[in-house]
Image (cartoon, rainbow, N blue to C red):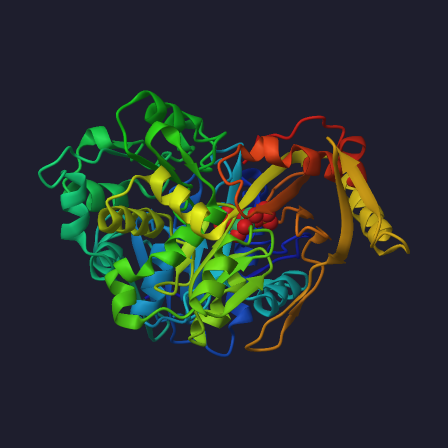
Length: 558
Ligand code: VG1
Ligand code: CO
């Protein structure tokens, strides 16, 4: 029998979850009691239901996941949790955690990941709490966790529990007179079974095998993140792909030094391999498996905003939606409005929420939302309450199989029918914080000053007249909660738009994100960078971004 020990502790500053959980350098989490404090604060935020509860625990395999899984086991036992479902070796993708919470109806789950941020001893770690609907905790819960972390005086732990998470199976412990159970589960099985229900695997398999014609060649890149074992189970074991169709499918603690963010800069390897090889389709996923990048033959790039719109227009090809029907659509505010046009054409509800997947959950729970996405390579549906990288790749393959078109043909057809929202995002990563904050304050002042609305701004022979200027705020239509200050937005009379916000997922300094989009009804086959160049210039002029950040070039262009 093991017993509970109460350890005195003092609050740490800055345990405030950002866009998606608490993310800091590994070395910050390694401080004595830092991680314990935050875990205790999560459990305390659930104090009315924690005793006797079940929680799901797992992470993306990065450095520190195993150690923190062990701490969670001991602290959960100390707080009267009855059972933990833990992925083998601590491995669970973020969408898989969401699915497990829903399937086994648990109180929630703790996800150990800093997502697309690099891993390893000198990089990032993160902890996120997901609620019983499977989704990231909403603002009122993360605010409560933060508040508790600022006043914490003790945590409860059972140091004597020795629990290995290497082997699948049930381990039982006695804590005082209570039972405590840790069930180590297969990291991929439940998720793979679910994908087989959602999609028509035999159809996708026959697409990949060519169905008598030339095989449809895919290249799937896990970037050494958590999706590796899922990709192996789905693409190789189920869909008959070979080792030539997959890359980097072994999860590594430091992602092999890669920055596991599937975009044109950090997944350049995949882009080049598809460009130079005989591939019809490429996909990459981020560290924790919730993001996706889709490219076609010759590395034809599908922007996430377009990907969302194309999927919205083709959901009828996916068995899950044939059964459940298609409800509304949603996107985050900075995401280009391509999907809005599909919603309008099909008479469906359309929602625009702040950045972060937590804002989609209520709409899904209320039965009003089927498909949503973010420009940051996030796409997903109400099958879980997280964005889901593998789901997106399988959804694309379902559409390609049903239409028998190439990726590029689908996009051209889409733009011809709906027009095109040209979109680009510039990221200025890890800039000094103070000047960036000042830039946002000054810009907001300028935007609310008299005469800004109606003012003209010119570049490259084009003139834009400001129609709307605001700091985006959102009221959730389900629970009426309000999220303020979610990004500065300047909309011009022709509908073009500039959005500027500071990232809430970085672990040091400030990352500035500049989003630009502009709609063209018929001139749809141009290059986004060329089309948007004047607007980008206008954005740099108005914000004086280069002066404040000291950067003349962005770190990443999407
Ligand atoms: C970024 C993206 C946002 C996404 C979030 C979490 O947030 O912009 O769209 O939901 O990352 O994604 P921010 O605050 O840095 O802009 V993940 O895959 O890192 O959990
Ligand atoms: Co992620």
